Image (tube, rainbow over all chains, first blue to last red; front, side, top):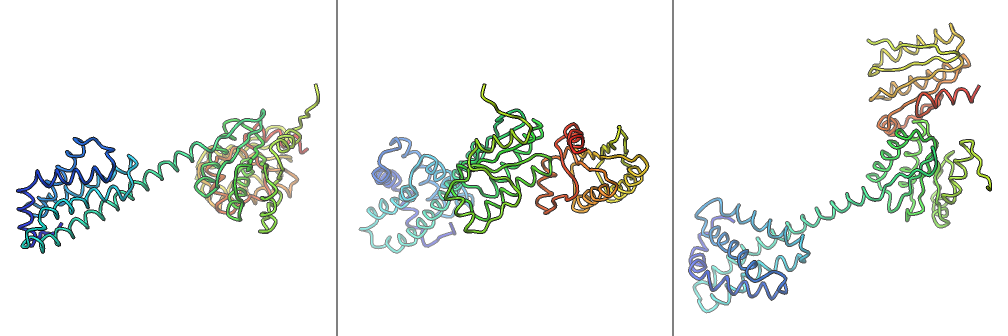
Length: 273
Length: 117
């Protein structure tokens, strides 16, 4: 926060009434977030923040503003992780205004300074909101990464025949992972056939088709044959409507058909025992 | 410049590329192979690129022309042991290596040539 000489008196007031203000602030915050934190824990957090707010308003030392931001950032990050809403997080700061206002309302001299103080708190509130949002984004990104790793298995169907059952939306990042895993497994196992099963892929548009074709081409360059299976009726409809061409890539309706095809191609015959 | 060795095994020429390919060495290889196929009357060529980590568009195209060229001498070319990263790069470059067949390893490449003749 910038050096606010116009808040000198309110700063002094805040320092002198720390106990009263923090007490009231803790009550208001606890009411707002529904007692999900223990009273002692909340009180400790608020006291720390309060001291830093006062220090930065006085502007006596340069480090206070930086420390305050760091503390608030840490606070909103932990709130984000613990499942508090951004409203509840920001409310924690805004209730400081209420607490202070209740005490300065009677004192006419302090009201103009209270406005400046209120603006400072608003800025801090916005800052916590931004940090909260950033922390949530991070959580989402982490989960996305975890899902990426979970949902791309390469399984061995038969000696020399691999299957890649795809589940979920196929974007460039996932295609890359699928492609790499499949090609690595081809090398490791020496399998000559791979079946990409798209039963679990909800939609196929031109981009997804492009990704699938790239994977097939890469497998071909390495000397393995690739079949695409699991094309559902609606998907077939979309593919035809969009005019997508799979060229000479063999496509099958079900994984079973693709397996039968791969067995035939590798010169094996399945007979009734 | 490293010269790539060409080994003759029966009716097949085996070309194990053990060095990172440069433009000059791959052009040299194309010339050497043409001479060698004519001299030996080989029916198949196996180019092993399992040790090659980088294939750019020039090398990709040259390998492709090696395939078309051997075709003229009635010899099949099989490119074996391509690394996944190389395959992905070639697809991104839009190269499909017309004229050569591919196999996962030298053994499967040999079988492919055997099946063709």
